[in-house]
Length: 211
Ligand SMILES: Nc1ncnc2c1ncn2[C@@H]1O[C@H](COP(=O)(O)OP(=O)(O)O)[C@@H](O)[C@H]1O
Ligand SMILES: [Mg+2]
Image 1 (cartoon, rainbow, N blue to C red):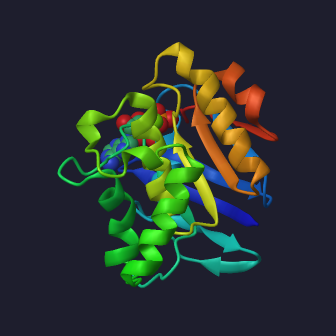
Image 2 (tube, rainbow, N blue to C red):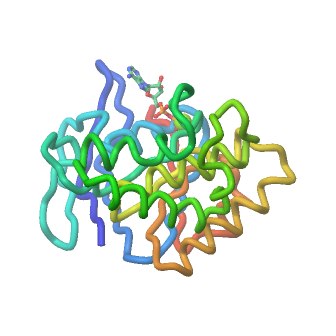
Image 3 (tube, rainbow, N blue to C red):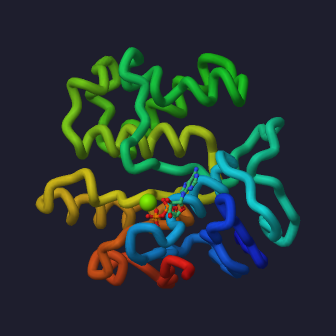
């Protein structure tokens, strides 16, 4: 279980996250909804350790952790960013394995096997030798999810997972998130789409820009 206690974050004198308390039980889906500028992406960036907080505590199963600690062998929260942030010069397999290889320092057999399993789980196992430019929007998203999962995060978070996709693919994303839930994956879904959020979430958090 991940808990956030009294998290605060400002940029200059602009407060973006104000005394945020949050509990994400194992295996559940938390949806965070709210208008642009509400601090949703900033919250995900702090969970991924890409942004520091000004104060507050993150707990994993009751133990404090620092998402930005550099010597982590396991990532707590893996984030699938809105623009996917794939490496254009690496094929699908190498996009999935680069983190386990360089950061987790796994051996080749371990990271290759894991990548193959993830690709198969996400339905992109036929594409391991393809490059990002050869993939559809939905396939790129699945690759981004596989890459995040390859780091063995406790929680998988998505920033606006439906925004880069045409409406017909929204249902597919919904199905995928619910399938991962059935596999026991804890997930955070950031969106400004309330209908989508209500369809998938066990718990809904509404955020507003702070005046
Ligand atoms: N690195 C940054 N430096 C300064 N201001 C930022 C930075 N990142 C985000 N902000 C500001 O913080 C606020 C919240 O942004 P963001 O987290 O992207 O919101 P959302 O994802 O809900 O649209 C916005 O006003 C944005 O301009
Ligand atoms: Mg955002």
